[in-house]
Length: 250
Image 1 (cartoon, helix red, strand yellow):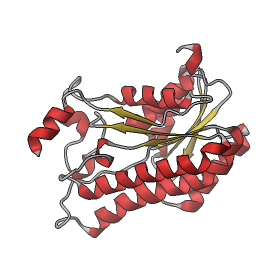
Image 2 (cartoon, helix red, strand yellow; image 1 turned 90 degrees about the vertical axis):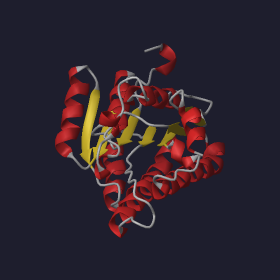
Image 3 (cartoon, one colour; image 1 turned 180 degrees about the horizontal axis):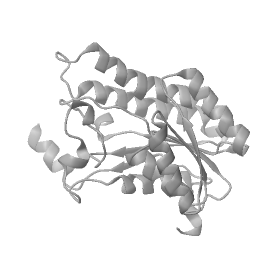
């Protein structure tokens, strides 16, 4: 880890930290010196991630949190401030993806994506903003290729990511003069548990090396989090043949 990406003394909240991009981001942020707060619903899996971080010499606190519960999210932020004194980095990573067509999508699946991908992002942003402004920190959103280009296979998921991207850019415009950096990271496919709600997860669907790995997205998170006076406003992290494959489907 280079000196330019050291995060010693900073405190980071990472949602969806129990696996995939969230777990890897928390691990890499801790390796860079940040005190990391791991948030997700599965406490057992959070404890496993935290144990790995601690065994490597890092600092990690487990905070089981349902991001769709605004009071739980507010408590997550307040507990973090009470424990570490500040919030310097927030990684809005928690998300759910469902691939049903609009005509076939059950209302429950629709509500789940809206609750997690939209409301959860809003609740954490709202709760963390005063502290991030005070620390002149970094607010990071995990967006998606689906939030930039049409996604016929899962239009509702795509719409939630378009919302995240538009929300992030508008927050960026609102708070930039107050010294807060806001970043959006847009991966295409990543080998994680994404897609498991509807069948085969991406980590099984794609061979290693064929699409991005969680560690690659986490590296982008750490880069964005390490910015001091500048902002890594938007980072696209696409597999190399993504646009060729995209064009073939049009």
